[in-house]
Image 1 (cartoon, helix red, strand yellow):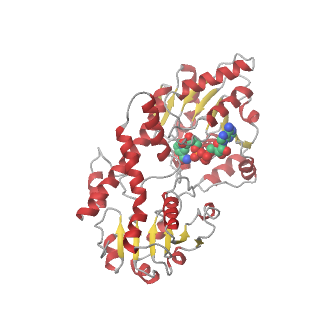
Image 2 (cartoon, rainbow, N blue to C red):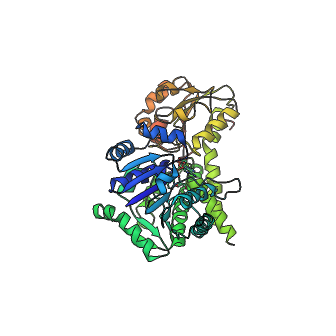
Image 3 (cartoon, rainbow, N blue to C red):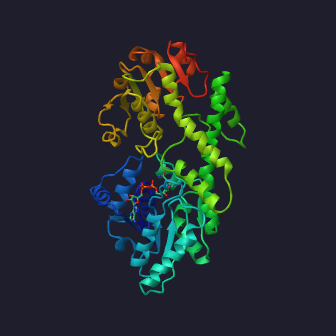
Length: 444
Ligand SMILES: NC(=O)c1ccc[n+]([C@@H]2O[C@H](COP(=O)([O-])OP(=O)(O)OC[C@H]3O[C@@H](n4cnc5c(N)ncnc54)[C@H](O)[C@@H]3O)[C@@H](O)[C@H]2O)c1
């Protein structure tokens, strides 16, 4: 099949390369000329496991092309995926203007009826708006072409996006006609032949809701365990054992029960906000989600609150921050908790020493006076405290004894629980680990 992909960012590039890998003829289009040029030079504009190999292979085979010209991606296409951003506005509602602009490009360049696929995360009932916008634009151009709108939400995780796409735990397709369902099924058949997974065929509204409900549920799990962590810190219970034992119950499951510095990234914060917002517009007060969001904002304050409690005044202190990416496995810093931590430290006069194995380049311009360290040990050496913001495996390899040797003051704020609490305290370090008993500091 001929497939167009509008927006070749984190989701779009993986979608385009995966569709090409399945044997479809794919043209990926982006209005960011720098990104298009980078990709056509054979480079990937962001860090994502396995993606460079997949993009290179599919571009070399000729099944994937990248362009800045919407006409190339749309003309003659059977299916066009919309993979543009849907960032939050000030009031929490998603900004759907990029989605509408992409739809306008489809209407402008389509040479026949196209199945337009919402891959971007959008609120329920966006499909109807999109179909209406497409038809308006089509009519305005004097054409009577009838485009179908399908919702095919994306469930991949940054860091494992290629594996998640080629070996998905489910494919959800929402369409309101048999024809659109048949086309989408044909599109995915080569994948289903290779890898068996549930294929959920439903209507557009249900598919849209599945995505927001899934992300909101995962975010709620995180906030729930972070709330439990606060109780553990006060009572002396251990949140990781609580989570492990809870997780043995298959009705609960262990995933997403890692207490930490709250969720960040480009999806959960904005998707929770968007779901609260669309629910309110529909007349429903989604109180659970408002609390999820509030608990998360509180969790994001935890690292700086702890370092302040343990160090007292931050003015003039050297604080090592390990990890700036919003999670391990990616260089994405969008809405990363680390940024809030660094901003908080700097606002109180601390000097930050930053390390991240892949994401440092994205924060150099933002923090021109920070100390950027090539090695984690360089950041730790002589620091008055360390805060772990991202759970990179390489940090786990640093022993408590080595930490004690390197740090000027033996203060560790482990916001990701990467080091065993007992090991740290055993090495004589003063520690705040999420969800472990909080050490009392004289006067604090
Ligand atoms: N990042 C993820 O892991 C993930 C997972 C699931 C869902 N999503 C959703 O997918 C959508 C895209 O997210 P992303 O992380 O890929 O964003 P991104 O910012 O990495 O990519 C979006 C791309 O769209 C391009 N673009 C914007 N408007 C355009 C237009 N009119 N024409 C052509 N190109 C245009 C941008 O230049 C950019 O390259 C969002 O709705 C997001 O919520 C993301």
